[in-house]
Image (cartoon, rainbow, N blue to C red):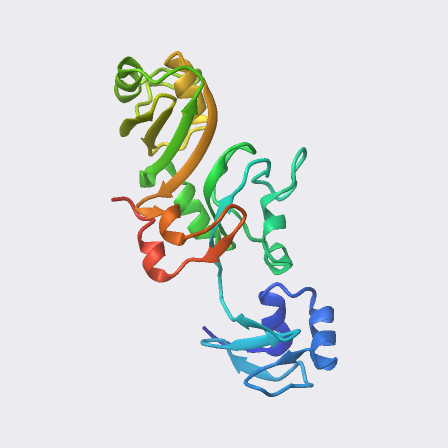
Length: 238
């Protein structure tokens, strides 16, 4: 952490341009520990800093690490084309500080989506070299058979892939439901694997990344939360 002027602090937290942040301070819209500063040049230690902007509490964070329960029909893009972007589900400040999805979920796929403004974290989480397992719950068009489960565990050959891709774990949960654990994170991987195995994915939900489960976060569709250090540790490979 470091010591920064108040306008820089507000800008870093996504409240807008330096000019706009200075106007917020001069208009008395910002307070710290019950004091309303009027000089944007005043410096503060950022560690443990708590701001009130428009009477709403904001804890200073050098970077943000977020879990979102993504609903269907939202795109994981800063520039969506056919559906609203997932950033519309977050406070406006996160757009200003360039928060972006960690990886992608299809517009019709629901479940856990990580988001951050920390470039190295995004790169590390997205890298296939980390082998982070992700758990998906798929609804299939045709009934789930023992043969389907066996095929997915043995591996299927996908177009443009040099070698067959296999599920780490594959368990039938119902006549048309299956849990699949993957670590590769290839494009449309669950849907393509099911198609290659002779079935069709009609709905898909990501329930966990690493050992961090969506259920443990208690998020309803469209809700988000900051991740604690303990929760972040669960995102590491098992």
